[in-house]
Every structure is written in structure tokens, then in C-alpha cells.
Length: 336
Image: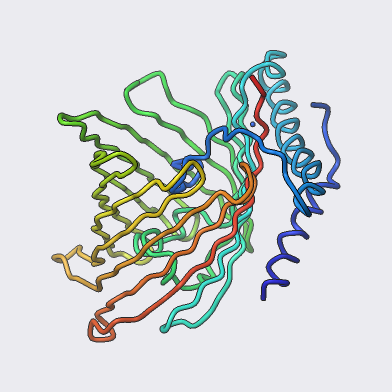
């Protein structure tokens, strides 16, 4: 299985490495990782990893050059000197649980940032769009099942900063690459407030329309504060609704994150899941932990996620699960 995972990831990298390069890098919209992916100081790689460092630079350079070329076309020549936040992320999840047994999932995602374009366009290619995931699948990745409805979407987005400036907003639209090909439109709004006694509140909201699936809405509200050096407590509430399924799903949880060092952190979570358009109904409880480590500089990240769920359909009896996640993250940073 390890060889299979490595082969898939390497195949994706090779196809990108030998693509034709143009002339000259949350949460999420990077998905928010446990460890903030900031500029960790480069260190000299050793052994086999040292051989692949030039390839890492080439992929990151390809992403950066592509973004700047598009930006200079739609925007101005300042694109070649303006900070660019484009990135490519390839994630491979290998999961097992007592209910659905084992499954694996490969998710490439690309963000092209064009900051000098007049409408601040964003190019997004993803095969695991948030609208195709439920609130439970967002909160408990180890217990989520493989979803055959997940398809690739390609689109453009622009910022909407001329009104309600306290909110970060964007409007996106494009096509879902499936047969038949369907259009989609989504609106995203997020904001963070600083409250009293070091508490803060953040809100992340999405409203979308996807062809035959109709409308969908997702909302996440998180209140939290640091409770000690290297420790943070949060209380997230996740809501999701899809017109084609016509029910509301929610997850309430408590998360305690411990930053172990500059490269690793672990988050402990406990919560409940439910539905509730006709009154809230509890569908299960869960306990989970997410250990995340930056294995190599900013390139390779690893997650180990054990979970114990107590689903209503199994009489609230415990069901164990585990996810191993390997993530390659490419973004070109300009050295100071």
C-alpha cells in the first residue's frame, strides 16, 4: 500500500514537472492545517531528500511563474514584483474504520493568485470542493466514507471589497468537470472579531449553486482563546445544508490544540453530530486527535488521526477509525 501511495504521488509530480513552463507563491483558501504553514527557515536536506530538492523548487517555480504570467496578462507588469500567494497541494488520505473498512483518496488542489488584476481574479482547480462534503465529513475525516459524487471543479473568483469592508468576501464561478458538465456559482464571506479577555470569534460562510444539485450552504463559527503558552481552546459549530438532500446537519465540538514545537502540533477533539430541520436529533458522538508534523521544510506534511465514534445507527456503541494523511505543499517564497 505504501508503494501504491508513493507511486500515485510521484505520477502527479512528474506530470507537473514536465508540463510546459511559461516565462517566470485557508482557512484554506487553504484548508486550515493544525500548523500554520509559514516561512519555516530552510534547512539543508540530507540523504534521499536532498536529491529531490531541485524538483521541489521547479514545481514551486512552475506554479509561481504560471500565476505571474496570468496576472501580467489580466493585470499589470507589476505582477513580476508583487507578492504572490499561489500554491499547489497534493493530499493523500489512507483511512480505515470498523464501519466502512479501508479506503484511500487523492486530492490535488491548485490556487492561482493574480493580485494586480483589476478584479483580483483567482483560479481554482479542486476535486474535493467543500460543497460536496457534509459537516460530519469536515469534522471527522477518519470516519467519512468515499463519496462518488465528488468531481473536479474549475473556476475563477474575484474579491468583493468595495462594501462591508470588515468582511473578506469573494464571488466564484466555473464548471464542474463531469458528464454532463454543469456550471456552479458560490459566494464566500469570512470575518474575525477580537472579544474581551483574549477571546476571539471567527465566522466562515459559503452559499453555492451547483447545476442539478441546486443550492447549498455551509457555515462555521469558532470561538476560542489561548489558555496557556502553546495551548489553545476552541469551540467550533459547523452547519451544512444541501437542497437535493433537504436536511440540515450540524457538528458541535471542543478542540484543545497543543503546539509541540515549530514543526508539530496535536489537537484533541470531542463533540456530537446531528440533524435538525424539524428539531435537533443527535446522530452520534466522537473523540479524536490530530497529530500534524512538518516532515521536511514547507514541502511534506503528515497527519495521524485516530478517532472513536459512537453512531446512533449502531446503538451508540464505539467504532474505531484511523487516517494517515500525507501532503505535499508547493509554494515559492521570496527570500528576504
